[in-house]
Length: 224
Ligand code: DX5
Ligand code: ZN
Image (cartoon, rainbow, N blue to C red; front, side, top):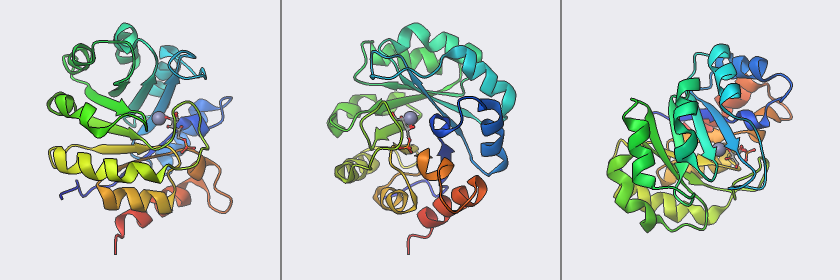
């Protein structure tokens, strides 16, 4: 099983300070984060509401990092253009949302952006197979979407393994939810290479963000 060797750490701004988003986006950049993971929630697809395109535009001004925009919204097809206009580099849409998935993925790729597909914990790996040739990244939820700070679901590990072997070796596989040095290491061992983490980084008891990012990356990289 091949996994892209480079481990990408994508801190989730959902765990940042909503009153100081620009500051925290810069902290992620200065702290060695690779992508800024931005969780968009509409109160329909998930029972929570976060922010929209104007906030993505503010992140675009605050950091040079790739904006990894995770759309937990019912109609990603209706908003994709606005998020890409606002500065999203990666746009990740949910298979389970109410849209024509292939069409939305094409809509993202035609703009030269990275088209990502996300699936919830309950969605079986097989559902992703028809889309593997149409995506640039695959996000496997390791918690139920909607909130940060939840416990990692270890039952997703076999799904990571299955999709790692089904997908092209260089397809980035993202894990998202409850990721810390230990769960991150398990996910990398199973074939993931992009670690989204919110609370384990922003709420780390002992380490500042820079140290917490380094610890997460270090644990995940040293598979021995
Ligand atoms: C949950 C979001 C995750 C979440 C991760 O719906 O998609 O990105 O912010 O937060 P932690 O790492 O705290 O579980
Ligand atoms: Zn997310």
